Length: 346
Image (cartoon, rainbow, N blue to C red; front, side):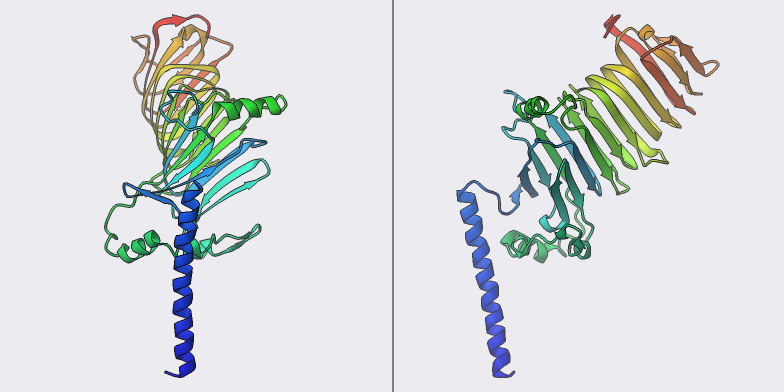
């Protein structure tokens, strides 16, 4: 080897060592200032947190392969199950260089990139690569070395947790005009495994649009006069949807799935409920009198209304006006009844 080559090699090695040392020093400095430079590694999971501001924020858009999305409203309420003093986005088991998180005007967007070639692309807003500091740290190097060893292990479940404080939501309402804070939350799962979504303790008139082949949705302690939509895309139904509502008031609910498992406890629809499926089971427990609803149910499955069989002629139509309650299914079983102590008015 030529002397110049040896010198170049030594310089390259020194630069790598200096880079590693710099990363370690920066990480320690960030930790001492209470800042997160690298993802945390807890119980085998990778976690990184980004604080978010609701000032003039209208839309949160999430696009990823598959995993969980948890939306926790009023999280700064003392005694909350998912307490946080600040509004934040928590990303679990997403590698730092394999996603983009951007805030542009009134849109907060998270997009999971597919591979190393896509993360190195140039976008309209600039270069998406976050920097070598996310690669030149011991945890990333250890994962790279162990990658082959762990190839047969199940991939860690990806999870996105959105914490929204009551203070921030109220402030956003006060600072704006008559329009609500967070007009939309959009969740799109590209993978065949679909996504699991939980909406908990949200009290804003937000649209929730969930697009996936398979959806597991739980909504609790939530109130919105707006929409919750579940489907595969604009032109097709999800293959499977498992949906549960509890102690919630919803303006409009639209679920389209080939196979639908739907349950509710103490759920009120203000304007319109529409469930479309081929197979499955639907259990709707209403906190208000069923006579309040303009109901139209069509299915070759068993139809029960307040424990009375309405299966023949495979349809049940009753009431008029608003709210409307529509179920269209080829053969799903449908059971609707009033909860004990149901009120005449919501």
